[in-house]
Length: 465
Image (tube, rainbow, N blue to C red):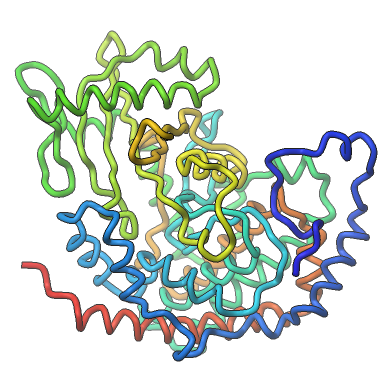
């Protein structure tokens, strides 16, 4: 059972305690982490659930289908069926169930909740420089820090095996992610709280960390793509001119504009939702958005695991026709809630936004949420394109993947440390490679489980017409 000091971030502070009690030193908190290691030995983190103890993976996935747009469910399975790695991406709920059936550290942080390799990437900071960070927070929730590490390392192992790497190499790459996480956490415990909060990974840091040509080239490609990924380029890709006015293209089922009576009825709902979204923003962002007006609306399919959830794009223009594209994406309950408890926030859009703000050093200034009793669903809102770029994992050589696993391990540790406790986590992890080896063992066993689930899905899911 976790002690009070081992709980995740507090979104309400005990002011009396703040004024009357001093926080424990890092030496004391490090010792608490060491003591937790005696309760949950590091070696136990290698465990995977037994076949008898596992819930059926397809039952979990089909259970999620019931709350989604039914006409998009086949597309979800088509995208998940592309490879074992894409299946893993879409099966966050399956892995959450599996993790709940194995020992965990008992030390809570704000989790990404879906920290696989493709949920890291480049995007613009507030000062318009490029940073590298976690970029998906749909499942964010406080929970055991090792769950994120396992999700990351397992995705490394699966990606390596998908690329044709040997089991030995796949295991080494997964272990590299864990080692980078442990070493970074050890460094962060000796940095001041405010410096950890402000620490960020930019492209210059990436250049120093990585050593392989493959990852350098992939980063360069992602950087070039990121610099071209703006509201202007998103508008050019997603819209066309109709009777002299810019409108979203029709590309079903990926992009479906709301036209005529659909648009009229939808606009009434969107108007109410947009007013709620503005209430979640600081006054200066509201003033900025006040210089734009709504031009068009469309449904837009996104991601792999998110396919079937409700997602829309809004085309805005200022008075001179300069575009801004906002994405409005449904935020359902995190797949982790069943296992770690309900979110502190009743609104899941707010849960996603706060989780992102907690874990990222810098992010989208227009990030906000809307939902509540007057809406059937909760949503979060962000810019669709804002200098975003991703490392193409499939194009990496093994050395590039190995290096990228290390970069993601560093980045995940930095995110966890922002409002977590790097001293306690580091105390638990220890100074040798016991944790790294346990995570590597887990990753390879989980890659085997994932491959079996993937094969079962391929056998039972009809091929698209």
